[in-house]
Image 1 (cartoon, rainbow, N blue to C red):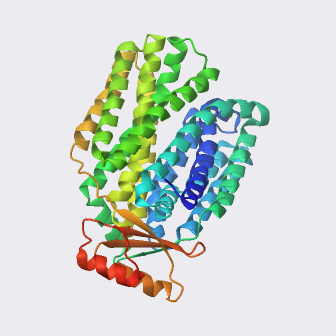
Image 2: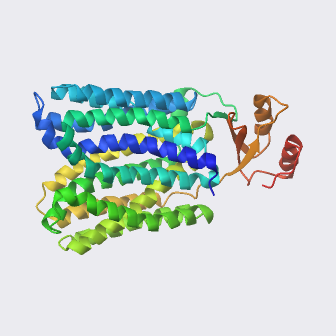
Image 3: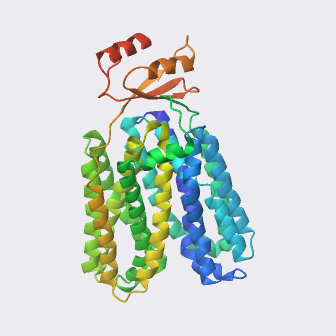
Length: 454
């Protein structure tokens, strides 16, 4: 079970993600039409205004995350959210399409998705990590559906500039949520490594690269699907565009009933690799269903449901697996590369989805997406089961300097990281049980003054 600190932090950081994504997603379903009202607007510039956010995110995730592995993560999150809010305000005050493009680029420059995920990894125990990441993944999915439902309605009330002001308000509200997250100080084994060397180390790890390919492909398929499927829901299921949110929301809720048990099994019984590969197979099954049944309303919805179930399992497992596979001292860097891959996947997925719309053969379009998913599955077979760490929750010593105490802990074989929350007077100590021997256990008992079950 999560403790109160973990529940509070997970709620706050998931809310930060959701508020940012809500502001981002609300623009997408309306801007292709509303953007035509701007001076100098052309279809190409309207497309650039939508896409430049993702491009800024993809470029700047890695620099932000490299810095986050060296310095405190919370100030970087505040900086990123301020840029997001300022970008929304610039777009809201613009009369020309070029002003909107500049505003969107500034908003995208607040590329702190990986930093937020790394902060969540800091404040949750290893055993509860997947649940926390699952909650964050679900908040993103829910914000997507809510945004697609709210965007057109809000635009009719406040106009497109008003919608940009809403994104600014959400960015500022997200900063307030950080007050619920404890201040943390990270301690790990000493290492001397430059920024470039640290990035190269992460890029050389084959399992991490497979996870980067996975998030790229997952978001390519998701974005392509949401461009490709609305016209089919209108044509074959006879569901008008305004009611598509009412279709996506129940499918998302239903998928949660399948996703959470899968996540629990993956963590509790250490079946992460099996569940991961099964989820990719589920995405393939959903896409195959759409190849042969898109003309039937109910089979179309079944195919979408299968995709949503598998997508939500993957959305929860990927960050958790990444946090296990990444070197502890380079956790944010690995998450930054992963987040860049995610945004690039969405960028290419949008491009591919537009091309699929130009096809006159719907089944062939779904076949292309299925082929991409099959290639993804074949690449993922090379993944090894991730390393599982355990967490001890310890009170900070009253008669000892914290830095001295953490140094003594890290000198013990099998102790990988100590995350100190001084305001709460506790520390999470991350332990590799496979490396703890009897001498290490006795050393730990002597240091703490009591025997600890590991």
